[in-house]
Amino acid sequence: MDVVDRLNPWWFSPSWEDEDKHLRQWQGERVRWVPGWIWELGLEPPALNFVYGPRQTGKTTGLKLLVRELLKRIEPDSVAYLDLDIILSPAELRRAFEYVVGRAARRG
Image (cartoon, rainbow, N blue to C red; front, top):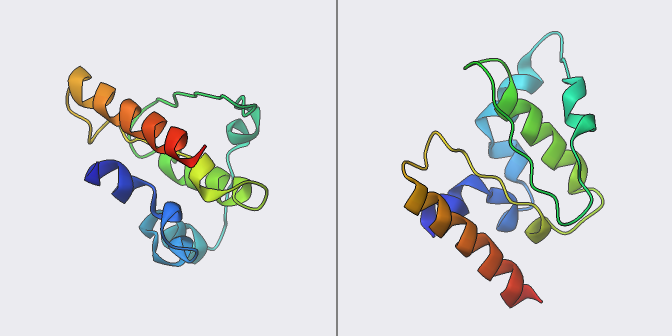
């Protein structure tokens, strides 16, 4: 599923963070704030977390910082990210979940 693949560039590129607009912007900041809530998420497999809140408050950047840290310890295929602003319907969300689960099953 193309939209899921685009949201998870670490599946395909080891240098994904150099190309990520959120992490590049964060790197360019004079003060780099890391939100504390990213360390409070349940990450024991199988983990499923929903992060929500007002627009433009650092949710995506925080999650990508978390992904960057997770990839130091686990395989890239073990981390999946979905942006529900892009997924427009419950049926599309279901297809996205099925794609991620199917991808994991093929990996073993």
